[in-house]
Image (cartoon, rainbow, N blue to C red; front, side):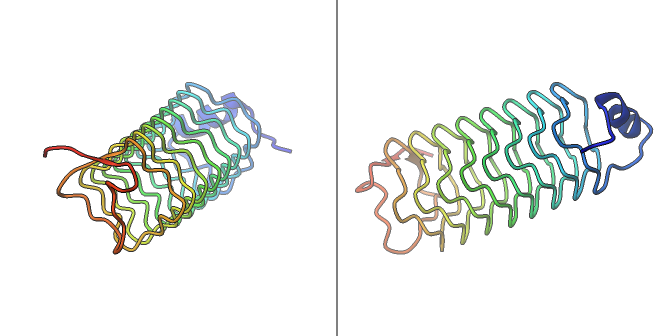
Length: 196
């Protein structure tokens, strides 16, 4: 178990110290101000981070499996190689976030804002991205098997070399700048082309 409390974590961050590799399992950090915090390699399994401000935070390699990050601000955060399997990231702000190599299997990213995010070559199998904003997101080579992209905005997204087998594209919007994998017919899959 963890030896940290919410107050301990907040004091460490406020003092400009790092929580690198810390065991923070099951701590309630909802609505916490963790802007630019260094939590790389931390164990955040099952942590309540609803509405937390993690903008520009370093969460590289952190284990956030099963964490609740709904409505959290993670814009510009480094989530490279993070383990987010089964995490709730619905309505989260992930604009410009680095999710390079992250494991997002079974995560809920419905209505999340991932515009400009780097998701290559993240494992995104079986996740919910319905209604998500993926404008300009980099998904090159990502594993998108069985993903729900219904109603998502794929304008300008880079999907080349991604595996979209079994993906739900019904009602997803895209534009002339969207880069599709070879052999994928977005309109036949139910996606809708929109003007630039």
